[in-house]
Image (cartoon, rainbow, N blue to C red; front, top):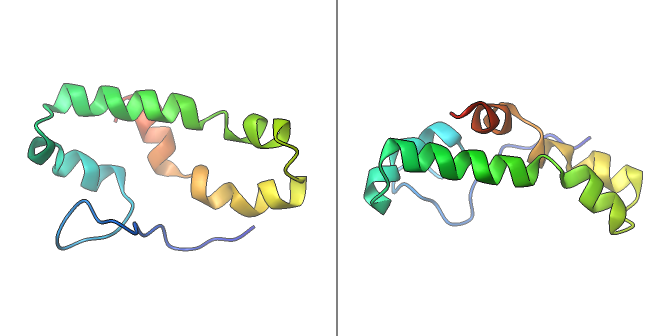
Length: 85
């Protein structure tokens, strides 16, 4: 399994390019989202992302490649989003 830092190519915060749900929640107002809207979007995205392994397998991606990508999808931010951040 590859475990690499999760860094955004296009930062959502001028000072921090980390891929972080906490960071996204902290800048939500900048995107004219109130906290409930931001949490709802996070939950919606988390719900879609949680099925990534099934989707990858359906696309005939090998188990080795799927496991290699796990750290990009399976992390505490996904669990937090599903809990409603």
